[in-house]
Amino acid sequence: MTNFLKTGFVALALVAGAAAPVLASDTFGSFDAAQQLQRLHDVGVNATDVAEDTSTTMRATVKLEDGSTTFAYYNVDNLQQINTSGAAATKVLSKLDVSRTAPIQSLDSLTRDNWDD
Image (cartoon, rainbow, N blue to C red; front, side, top):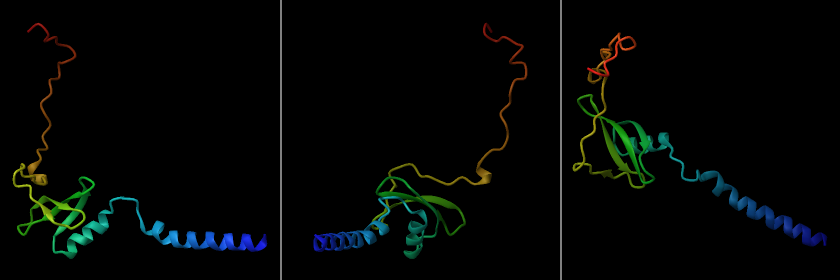
């Protein structure tokens, strides 16, 4: 009986030991933005940020030579850029592109009834 228990514990330890590295290295499909950003830098893409677009694609914010930024889409597995020429071009807005003026509000909206006008 003691031999049976020893053999069982040894077998359990071997199975747990073999499974531990697999479980430790697997992130169960989570998107690691820092790792993907480094992978893009390694292949020469001047990306400043990445985000998961779908389970197989990611969107990268890429800084162009003129200093402007644009979005580019890449396959997560092989880092091939996805052609979006048929789609509308996307551009990252800068502070100059966004208006900071508030819309004009009517101050008599609580006291004036425009329903019948």
